[in-house]
Structures are given as structure tokens and as C-alpha cells.
Image 1 (cartoon, rainbow, N blue to C red):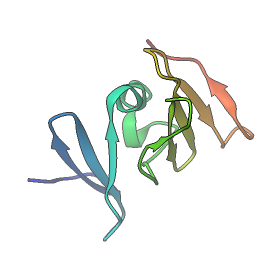
Image 2 (cartoon, rainbow, N blue to C red; image 1 turned 90 degrees about the horizontal axis):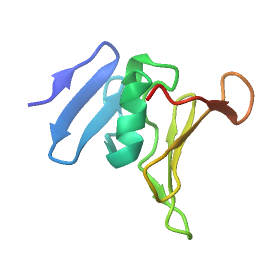
Image 3 (cartoon, rainbow, N blue to C red; image 1 turned 180 degrees about the vertical axis):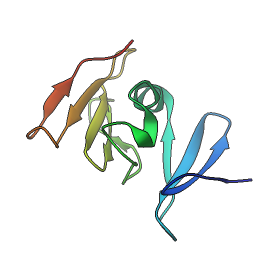
Length: 97
């Protein structure tokens, strides 16, 4: 069963979760290293807010996912890069890990 959040809903699955923002929001998948990094930043209550698009695979094997206030990039290895829009375009955020 889905869990109601303050401003949306989440449904967990093995290997990821579906998040929707607002009433009737389109569900967005968050998974893997990007999800782990987003959780370390506070998930939907952190500076990135809710996910707004599914993860996009890039030509070099990397992946990027857009959130309300920025993006998290997985460069194809363990580390991730997180960039906030709210402090200016592409402001890097140090990992809490």
C-alpha cells in the first residue's frame, strides 16, 4: 500500500520506490545510487524536494535525475554528484556520507 506524505505519496518496491507530488501527481521512480544520495540529503523534505522526472540514462553509461530544486548525477560508479538550482545554476552539494 502507498504511504501518504505531507505533500505526496510513496510506494516502495524491491530496488526502488515510486513518488508522486501533490494530488494526482505523476509517479516517478527513484532507485539505486541516486535514491541513496537523495535519502542522505533528506528525501522529499531535503533541499532537492520531490523527483520530477524518471532517471535518464546518458550515452556514457551515466544517469541523471531531476528533482524540484536540482539534479543528482550517477557517473557510472559508486559516487554521485548532487547539484542544486536554488543556490544558483548547478551549485554542487557535498555528500553527507
